[in-house]
Image 1: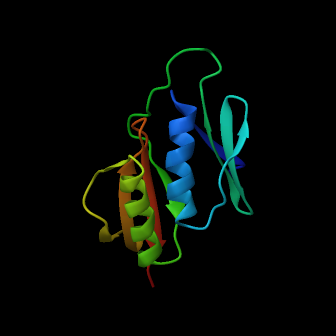
Image 2: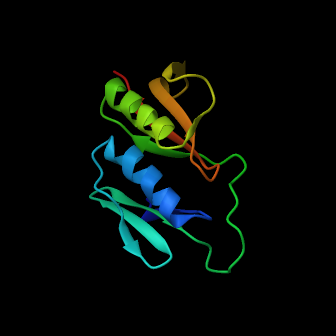
Length: 125
């Protein structure tokens, strides 16, 4: 359904350092730098971080969350730990199991250094 997801940053170097650690914890190679933006390419899609091209400050989406698929609870925990160590802030409830209409999920939430809300998700059997 999606070709890519792009979020904004006001500090590209800081964003790259953060996402290289966080996404590295789930097996994604470091970003490719392309001028005012960075790209993480995988076989399932592209995640990008960019300085706004209109020259205005980047702001966070109210109510927006970007979820990254994890293969295990351990991988989600490693993702979360890498994010906190890299300058992110834990948010929502602590990492753990949530049950609801989408089944049993293991979720871990962070705010990146720019305030964007991101999530590690492992679908449990």
